[in-house]
Image (cartoon, rainbow, N blue to C red; front, side):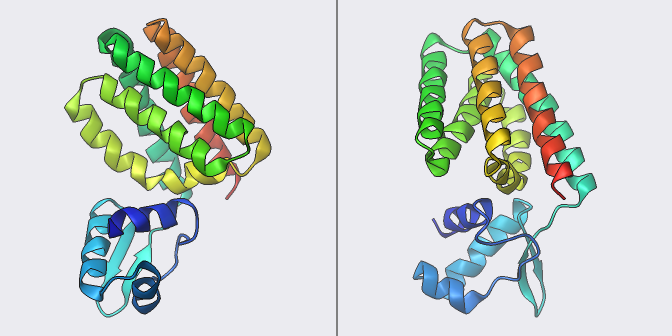
Amino acid sequence: MIADRLRQLITDGTLKPGMWLNERDLCEQLGVSRTPLREAYRMLASDGLLSIQPKRGAMVIELSPADIENIFDVLSVLEGLAVRQAAQRASDGELAHISALNAQMIAGYEAGDIRAYFAASMGTHVAINRAAHNPALSAVYDRLNLQVQALRYKSNLDPDEWAAGVADHKQFVAALLLRDADGAERAIRAHLGSKKSFNLRGR
């Protein structure tokens, strides 16, 4: 639970890249002792979100431009494969769930609720990944995706990029629901390419 809360604080930018974490402040904020907080640190370090250094504590990892480019390039391939396999393997119930998440995402966007939007947006990506029924793919995807959650969240603070992201989602989800594997893969890979380009421009 503490690790999940720290991930959320990193994603929404409360804990910024390059920031050293203050144990005392976080213990007070989260209402926990230092022992479980430090265990959460170790979990996030294994996710690639924190760097733990002896006698200095934990720091939020700051990705270099090369890191951003490399991670998004790999995610583009992984998400492309996931949506292709989902188009081939997903049950009708799984596709209905993805459609419902996409509708929630659109509702969040129309309401201007970025937190609700982002939860449904990322939920859509994860649901597509799971609908591929490829555990090896999911294991690699989950770790890499965590490392760029904050960048994906921040991109939605730009109105034009947010609108473009919604349009992208509508396109690849529509193709998936038609079980158009080629179209869905092209659309989702273009979406990841746009996210990469935006985050590289913003540095």
